[in-house]
Image 1 (cartoon, helix red, strand yellow):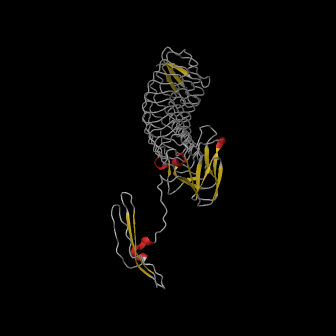
Image 2 (cartoon, rainbow, N blue to C red):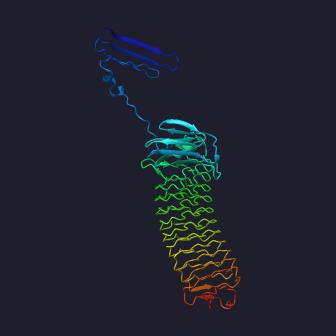
Image 3 (tube, rainbow, N blue to C red):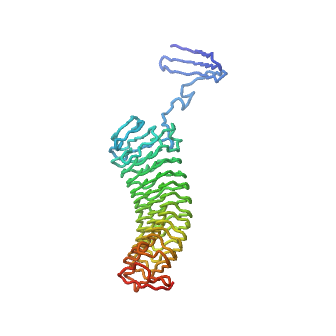
Length: 490
């Protein structure tokens, strides 16, 4: 039997500050058990010395549970988690550099913990449960050319989660990065993923609050299985930043909150184009608008019944044009308090809203070119709103109520001086229309009144045009069928 009772070792470092380590170890080897007893151990702290006295017992006695450390996985926050796909079914994830696109830096793909870098289109074969994440140091994975963009497409059911900033991580730490610096950065990234779902327990983060031009355009276009959208926290937007972002996401039932109050041109264009499952429009709090900011935003969203409040009083070019085009389920229009209009601001706004029977008030007295052009085409209006404007502009009322088959009475038209094509096709095909009152005294000609009553009044009894006394002989360009009667009684 060999016994070693006291074995002393002391190490001193000559650096300043001095660190000392005193170890006092008692090792008792027994011939049969060969049991190792650690009697004591001391670790001195900076600028001092500590000593532990001997004690009897095994490693477990001295250190308890610490003697058997268990392996634990590092848990990442969702902000620290890179853009990740989790396969629900076996299949292929296609990473495509469309149009021969090249990027300044490679993309790193990590599958089940094993990483590789790519610079060209790549197919990734996955089994159910496989996890694939993406990262790169590019500021954008899209060149901006129509056919040159990165697309990640799965041919099977797949979950997505994590922080998209890992894919455009040009700042070093994507978990804290809130700025997209590259135009078109993530445009069309998930386009046509019909089996893409946001993970039921993990978020997909789009955390940027500083956006770039077209950065999210068409990002989820035609992702028909998507039911909820990621949060969009930015309050200041960029040119076309959300253009067509969720276009044709027919499974989307809930829109994200849109807190932005500083808009840019085309920022929400086509954002929810043909999202036929969408039930409610999000609130739109901005009071200062930008050109075409809401253009075609809810086109084809036939599940929306109520339009959101639109509080702006000064409008921008095309700001609301075709905003609710072809929304046949819409029954309640937004209040429209604006008194300062802009070109095409309301053009086609409710065109095709076949369930809309009541129009909002339109208080503006000075109009802009094409401001109301086609605004209520193909709606179910029975009564038109008052039109108090006395200063007109080219095409301002053209096609405004065309094909409103239920409209029986037109609003009085108080303007005395007409503008180029101001009333062109205004009441075309309003078959039940029985009366129109127009106070115009100048510029009454076939250009300004072209087809304004075409096919109007065909189902009415004795349709009548009321005009200013002494103006009954002007060129009112009335249809030949049916016969309209002119009365100079205004």
